[in-house]
Length: 223
Image (tube, rainbow, N blue to C red; front, side, top):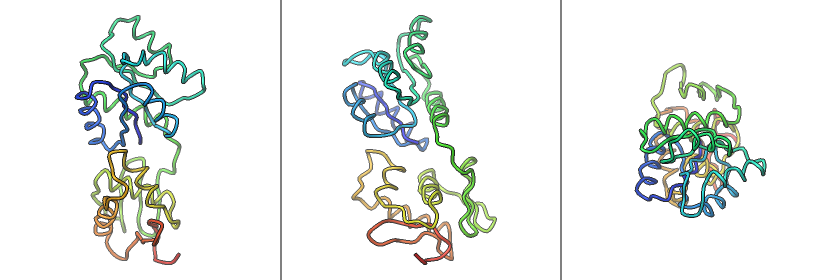
């Protein structure tokens, strides 16, 4: 799940982004509406979180324009404006949720995850690859009936591979879908994680390297 966070307060943006990433979400950050507009143009987000009042303008007016253009990304407004009229205005402009500052970060994370689920593309609830079972709804992984303990990022990569089982998934695509703009695609972050996954999945190996492309999840090493 990928989130766009638009907040001009650098300290608040850093803290919220860190909490969302700790919850397993990929987060792109923008400090103003022009940067948000550019990000929304090039990336499909599961949710966007906007500070209501930005130096570059009122985010409610911007979101209203998104809705007129037929863009339906779920939006949560963060704002110090707490009157009933303000909240009604936020919803009327196309907002899906409204959280008043100061707020509890766990509540924000829960609301964002709820909006992300609302926008998620329907996927098969369980992927089977050989004796491996990936339950995407309950976020559980079993091999030969044995429950495995995976980190949030490990599960994200395995889920991405499972969704395209028996096919090569490009390295750049895995980085794009499972990390955010803070990750460096040229680093070995993916290779390290795949190595950890292979150890946890055990033998015979299920994750195969496709040289020059990326990785493939399959019961054997045939191409």
